[in-house]
Image (cartoon, rainbow, N blue to C red; front, side, top):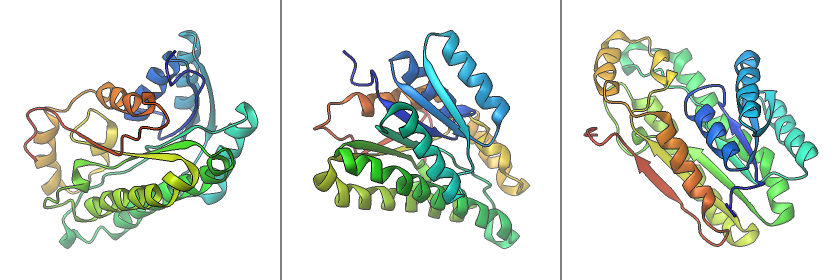
Length: 247
């Protein structure tokens, strides 16, 4: 039997891209997925699509920058299914820009979503996972969490932070609570992520990179692989690029 079968998986940023594809794949393997994003219409459509394929899904409109809303999400998952097995911290933004453009509001939004949102998710699920001495936290970083390019300074900083937070969580909870951690660092993927870029000097170069972007279902399969391993095996970090992507 699949190790995914019956697992309760919370997915943030579930309304499109990597989150939506992962929800579809995991539900097809028997997971009970808890969908979270800000767009209720998209969440409803995804839930219906999953149910039509015989899967099980619930959703809760959630802003990951709100501690209260993310706590309520985890509570809803636990009250509905009696446990929380996996958290996929997938919600993120990528409004790349050169520092001299002073897009300070965009910097702060990235910090709020990409860093604080991840921390809020971890804080919300840890009590449930620690109580049953088992769980799995999967955080989406990026190739930009390994390499820095012009225009990626703040975004890269947030994704380096995701990797640091995840490794710290591993060191604190792997032996104490048998909680597994996984960092997934995608390269260019066909998602709405780059649509948040407002700096035209950066956008043109990023558009070239994304001409070779891979389908988000490739990342979904990677996430499923990490979950599929038995409880005594932790896939701690995976970097997934298009074959032709150089950086």
